[in-house]
Length: 281
Image 1: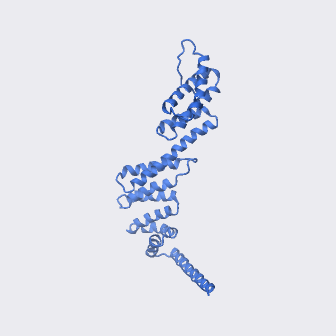
Image 2: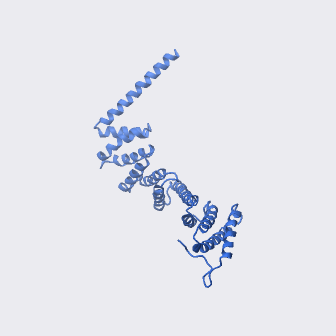
Image 3: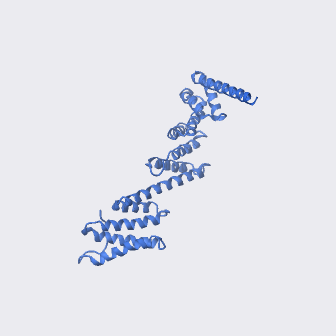
């Protein structure tokens, strides 16, 4: 008996599924705009089938132009793309909605969802961050336009997460220059990082790597450039010690400092030459 009941249940389920698929296929072929619209809204609101809702809504949107249903259809269609993780398309359609219906009670949410779709489309920090920059700009624009929005807290959280991602990207990029022995590029990148993220959790590592990058650059330089570059090493070391006097990397940095000081003592500045570091390229 149990086996028979399972077979009957499976048969009934198959019949229901076939019926549902058949009904959906008929809707796709139907020319009845009202019937397709009603079914699409039902798929979205009640059945949470965003694929079927989206495929029904897409061809309807141009046919609904000028009708009151058009606004809801376009808003839901944008959401169907978001729900299916088609974030690039979702961002486009939410932005389009906000542009076409600026006075709509849904316009604010559409602007937020435009930013949120871009946020979701932001790649891992190792990859190109063009999308991340666009997402940050969109979130800031939303916050500027809607400072009291109910979405404000979530928008600020997204912005913070993206800023952190770009911070990690900047630090890891500078660190990579050092690992690849491109010391001059590392110094430039680390300096830029310090300027852009003065309160970063990576600040100590950045300051230490800047000392070591300049030190290694000086060691590998031609003789006529070494003095100026060792002077820079000393300056970077002093800034590092002032900012992070308890750093675990202090002893390693001191080796670079002592070596630089010894070189400067053994190679005094020519008579009449300033005893200060100069910008070098």
